[in-house]
Amino acid sequence: MGESRAVGDVGVDAGGVVTAARAAAPAAVVATYVIETSLPLERAAEVLAGEQSTGTFVRVARESDDLRARFAAQVERIQEIPLTGASPLPGAVGDPAARRRALLRLRFPLDNFGASLPNLLAAVAGNLFEIKELAAIKLIDLELPKEFAQRYPGPAFGVAGTRRLMGRPDGAMVGTIVKPSIGLSPEDLGALVAELASAGVDFIKDDELQGNGPSAPLAERVRAVMPVLERHADRTGVKPMYAFNITDDIDRLEANHDLVVDAGGTCVMVCINLVGLAGLDYIRRRARVPIHGHRTMFGAISRSEQVGFSFRAWQKLVRLCGADHLHTNGISNKFYESDAEVLDSIAAVREPLLGLTPTVPVLSSGQWGGLAHATYAAVGTTDLLVLAGGGIHGHPDGSPAGVASMRDAWESAARGESPADALAGSDALRRATETFGPVRA
Image 1 (cartoon, one colour):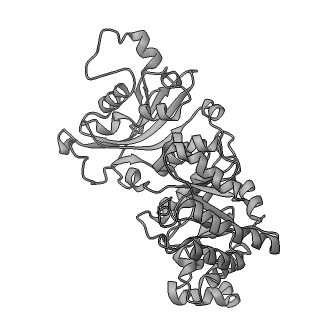
Image 2 (tube, helix red, strand yellow):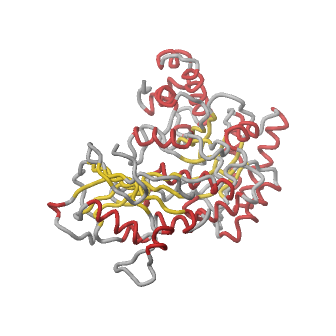
Image 3 (cartoon, rainbow, N blue to C red):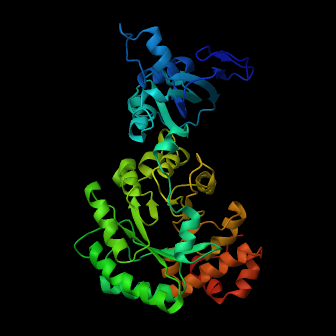
C-alpha cells in the first residue's frame, strides 16, 4: 500500500491500486463493488460516488466544499482486476476497447441515511445500477457500523434456539420440503407429516410455492399438521419443527404468524425478497418462534456477474432483519451456483456479524445423503439445516428410508468415517445410491 493520506487524497501504490487512506472518521458504511467501464477508473469511481451521495450530472451552486466534505461518498480504494469477457450491460456507453474492470470500495457517511436498511439501500444500491458509464456494477460486500445492530435485533433464536425447539442438541439438523410442492390436500399433507415425524425427521417446511391459496389455505394446513405433531410429541417427547409459509402482504404477516403459533407451531417461513427487508424486520419484532428465511427470487439480483448483489453482501442485511435460518443452497445443486460459491455462502452466514445471534445456514437444492461426507469435509460443522426434497421423497423405499439415509450419512461423516464405511453401515444410504448415483467423497 502507498503512504497514509487523508480521506480524499487519492494515491497509487506499487501494485497499481488506487487508495485513499483515511484518518479518524465518522461512522460510515463501506461498500465494495466490481465495476467495468470505458472511463478512466478514477473518473468512473467519482461518477458513482457523486451520483449516490451529493452530486448530480453537473456541479450545482449549493454543493459547497463543506457539504461535500461531510456528505459525499469517498473513494477508498480502486484495484484493477482482469476483464472476464462478459457482455456489457444494456445501454452502456464508451469504447469497448478501452474497457477496464476493478474492485472499488466506497465509504458512505452514516449521516446520509442513518441506521435504516431501506435508506441504506438507496445509497449503496440505488440508481448506480443504471449509470450508463458502467458496463458492469455488482455490490459484493458491505461493512456495517455498530449502529445497525443497535437498531436491528437480528435473530431471536438462531442455532441454539432452533436446536432446542426441535429437540436436536447436536449433529446435522435433517429436514425436508413438502413434495409435491403444491397440490396436496390438507388431509394428505397431515398423513405425509405423520410419516416423516415417525421416521425421525427434524424439520419440515412448506414449499415457497405454497402460500395461502384456495386449494390448501394456511389455516387448513395448520389444522391438518399441528395435531399430528402434537400427538408425536406426546408419544416421544420430541416435536419436529414445521415451517409454515406465512408470506403475504405485510399487513397480514402478523395474523398469519399468530395463527401458526396459537396452534402450537414452532416456526414460520418468510420469502424474504417477496416481503422485503422491511417486511422481514416487521415480523421479526413480533415473532415468538424462529423465522425460516427463504431466498426465492435471489437469482434475479445475483445470477449475473455484471449486475446486482452478491450473496455475501445480501445475507448481512437479512441477518440484521432477523432471519434465524437462511438458505445458502448446497453443493452439487440443481441451480446455477458452483460449489465454491455455495461454500462461500455457507461460510458467510457463519461469520460473526456485529454480535448478532448466529443464523443457521440452510442447505437445499438437489441434496441427498450421498453429499454429506463432501459437505462436512468442506464446512467442518454440523450446525446446519440440511433439506432434501426429492432426496428424501424420491428414495426408492419411500420417504422414511430417505430420512434414514440422510441421518445415517451425516452421522457417519461427523464421526470421521469414509463414504465406504457409511455405505457398509446403512442399507438406506446404499439403496439411495441406486436412484441418486454414487456417494460423493
